[in-house]
Amino acid sequence: LIAAKNYGGPGTVIEGITEKDVETVENLGLFRSVAPSLARQVQVEYKDKVVFTQIFATPGKDYKESFADFAGDLETGRQIRDGDKYVVVIGHGVANDMFDKEIRVNNKIDINGRKFTVAGIIEETGNREEDNQIATTLEAAREILNEPESVDFITARIKEGQEIEEVAEKIKR
Image (tube, rainbow, N blue to C red):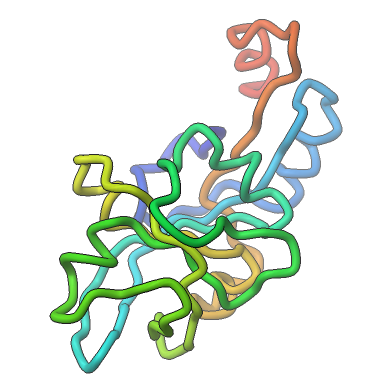
């Protein structure tokens, strides 16, 4: 993850990273994937119950590569993919514990006033923060958050043969 110096973790609204920074990181040629990402607090409604939780977003085309090391295994359904927009993958806790009724694949949930279809549910990890997360596409998150240009952090995976410490130093510059 590449974050601004003042990034305080998911849900903190910061300034400092832009789409231009994403482009600069891509142009370094040191990474096999580079994706802008958002992490924010959202209001989620299902069957007349409202809760607040974290949403993580990255472009649909980059989801699998960007979150391969972060997301748990799917319990059911599928991951987000290129071409998706109002689709989410939810943690086990969102599906089973946050609401009075269990959420299943293909159910609709309302996030910040917009309907999303549940594409997949992640297996329980035992980490409450991870189990209570929702993932969606960057395009949809920017719309519901009214943040058309925001980037909270960059998810980047270095190319094979690169030394992570050297790459980190180049990024700092």
